[in-house]
Length: 252
Image (cartoon, rainbow, N blue to C red; front, side, top):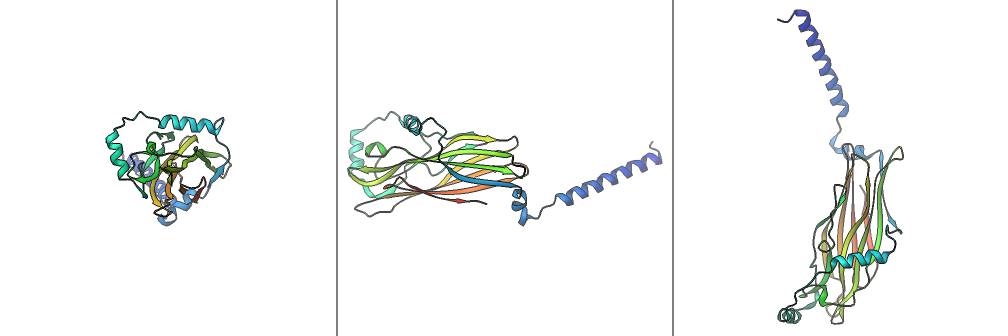
């Protein structure tokens, strides 16, 4: 049986532990409204356009992507004639994806043969029925964050690419191979980086007689650890008659 002195000692220790836990809980409590700002107050997230492509030449990037996009096609002449007879050049559709992952848990997961969007005339089966597409256009960006001590927590470089000026039987200006490609992904232990593309929308920004495809795409970038959570939403817009890409960074 336990002696009275031992029981008192155990009770005293339990009381001390309870007091410590209460202090820890009260100190660790964060008001929900200010949780995001408090978590990120000592981390500086920056997103900037970069003129550097982490390959020897942009041409190497284009060749690699186009090679991956190549796939043998079984052509059915009857089906091709049917599709051609029902093509509506003023109706712009995306035959690619509406949503896809680019980076998942610090690893690139995109497959450019399938993970891309486009803006083509309604009725075509794919971009092979069209012509005059430009070379691949590339714009590179860098997203990185440092803490108050100047330590880089993560550093990600990625490129937004597309082809424009595509036409169907000499008419219209359309888009193809619109996607986001990760290049370098660096993160310190404990940090996880995810990147997804979604909210893809394609419309006709021209006229019924002279259609110009326009495509918008949202990219959601998230980096997080046990102590911090940082997010940025980028909205990119592409046009079939221009090599330019307009974008807006929405920082937290």
